[in-house]
Amino acid sequence: MAIYNRIAEIHDEMQVWRRDIHQHPELCFEEQRTAEIVAEKLRSFGLEVHEGIGVTGVVGVLKGQGDSTRSIGIRADMDALPMQELNDFDYKSTIDGKMHACGHDGHTAILLGAAKYLAESRNFDGTVNFIFQPAEEGGGGGDAMVKDGLFDRFPCDGVYGLHNQPGMPRGTVNIRSGPLMASADTAVLTVKGKGGHAGYPHLTIDPIAAAVQLHVAMQTIVARNVGPVDNAVVSVTMFEAGTGSNIIPQEAKLTASIRTLTAEVRDLVENRVRDICKGIAQTHGVEIDVDYARGYPSTVNHEKETYIAAKAAAEVVGPANVDTDTPVRMGSEDFAYMLQACPGAYMFLGTQDDTHFHSVHHPEYDFNDEVLSIGASLWAKLVEQQMPRS
Image 1 (tube, rainbow, N blue to C red):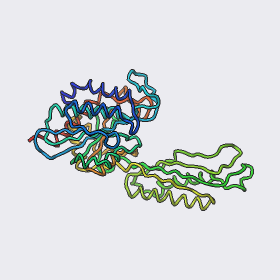
Image 2: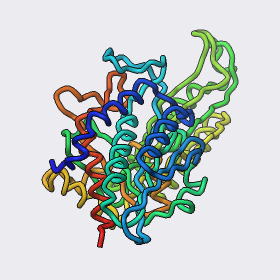
Image 3: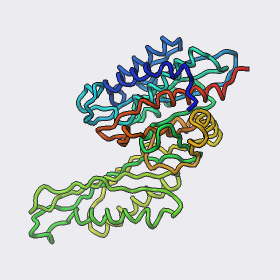
Image 4: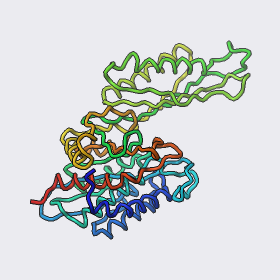
């Protein structure tokens, strides 16, 4: 590992930052304490600081040596998850029902470490915009920052982000050009029938029978409508109906999570869901209300910026530890909104070792502090590589 010496020297400091944030998790758009800490540290490093972007977002601006107009944006997310932590170490969450179970505490500490190093060295010619984003976990904080004028106020030639990945060996990097992660849509399908006594089903219109057929039919969308080389997932994750064993209910409700990688397949799946609902409704004599909500779009890396990020990673972790053709993931990420507004790339940084193996969103997950210096060095290398001093 080609860790910067100065970054290695501040590793313990980054760990203190990370663990303090871990102890005080804040949910989507509630990141007041975290944002204040980030802003205070950026000011102490000598950066120009802007707060309240996209509600609780923070941007630190750092100019290097020289008068180049080149610029780079680097993003970290700050929010936690609404879940109970089951770890028992001394820096576990102090707030019931809230936990940093996805490593955003680590992402924030990594970017702060890179900011401190780059502010001290200024070994680059251009501008770095350090973007600390709220509400990645379902809140759409990336979209909120973009709509709040992020790239108008802080122009970037390219924007970059990373996510820790417990399923990859510590110190490895995965990236690919093009679609990397899926869009995330939700369909809530309410089947309305006619309730009555379970002993007299002929006097009712059974919404459960229709909903069961609806569930089965939805499983054919990927198998029989999506091309075999395309990617899509339709998962019915909730089925709600009934209040008693002798009652046929008035309604049944299905909720589905839908993941796709391209706009064409996204449209196809939505259209098929709506068509299937119409057919099942007519067949069973029920009404089906369709509440189809489009969430995060696909995370699509740009080719040039993917090469830039992969090159920087290879210089830090070694070429053998960088996979530039990683398989697509069917999870989602709201960095996608930033990639729609500005060229850029997103990558995964491996964190798994003998003591850090729980997946993200697990109640015993903890970010692996051993990668703090790796991540900060990667960002420093990318900045110095893309905006060298003349």
